[in-house]
Image (cartoon, rainbow, N blue to C red; front, side, top):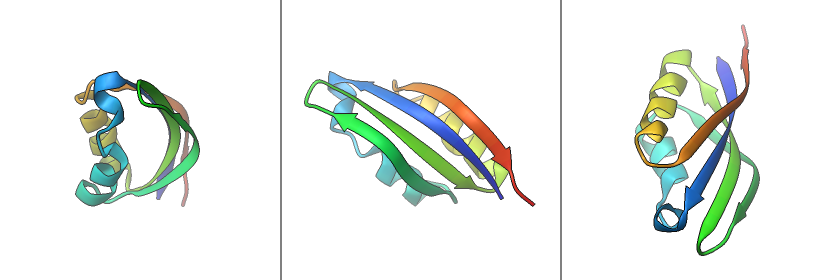
Length: 79
């Protein structure tokens, strides 16, 4: 199992979308919200994705297609 911490930043048009729900539903990863601050016109969330490396990579690649600003913070791979 691997895990990666990611910061996601959303502008007005993206704030209302259910991004985290879609990640948890469409990819084989566990999503943990570490920190968040969301308002009507701007928001950011720090999440941790846990799961197989390939699924984390797929989920991260998909996030990059959504218009969100995606920044990987920390990675670790467990045995």
